[in-house]
Image (cartoon, rainbow, N blue to C red; front, side, top):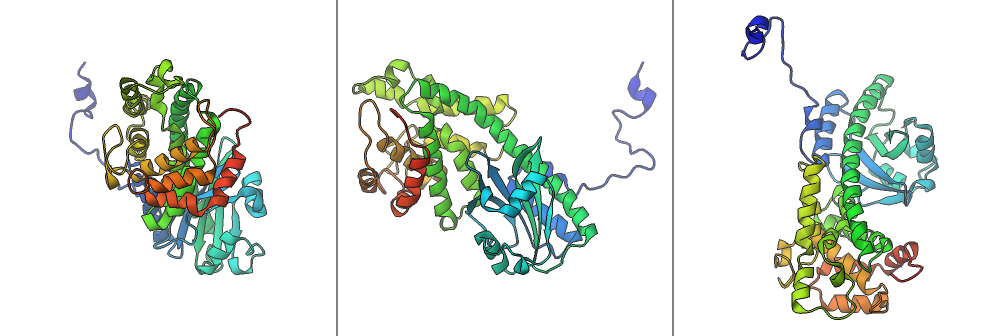
Length: 393
């Protein structure tokens, strides 16, 4: 039977009677574009209904460190909270929201009794009057919070809150979906990286430290480099995956106690290329090749051994040809390598390591990245104390 002709529906450019095609105003949420762009679009959409909705912001939650970290915002200008992190445990109000899973409405921020908190002071100081907070929870796991703010007090009526619930849950699903995709990718790549660890002298704590050094550098470079919070978070997520390609390097070379020959070093120098190839394969296998952040992961894996003077590898990039995320991770990796004990060397002091790295600024290492570590010794030491080796590593 000719089903096309029988039903008269398929293969024909005809519109059925009483059929109307509409524009989906929320289609951008499912488009292949960065999350910050999606949030800007969502903010514009929501303001058509609520003109007094002046700010929408997302913070993420890291259960390993109990840290809430600014991630996304749409406010039509500079955000009062950027490059900011704070323990969830220090906020009784947000902890209550997380535990109960219920939204919170504050009709007058200036009159609230939690203005002693830095983040509350910043929000109030920028003239925001009303705050509505939704927890981002999926399968019982807290991923963060969404904040809706107005410069007016008592800005949101009950029907407005119903609308913000709908918008918030749509946004929450989009953010959580991307974070889960990145976690899935990260878990796969991290598994490969852990295999590489067991074949090398590096440890899991090395990866934790250099990830936090990378986060510190990216966060404190912040506005001066034109970064945003999402960039900082993705650097943190991807930094531990930098040496994935070592999986393809023979054990005999990774564990050789003596000096490498020129040919052996050439083989070692191929690991960033192998790593980038593995990343591409895993992106394809997980169906994540279209992720906007995929390029950042490739850059970190392939280019973290490049040098500013063009003497690095594998592509001999120079200066700003080297992506900023790779320059950040390079500095974090070198610093932790110098300050960690290995079978073939003792750990250097922070001062000794930074003195050597300062001498390489502008030639091998990014000056601004090194300066962050030099200028914030207490923050560096805090990371080292948190992820301290108990034995060789």
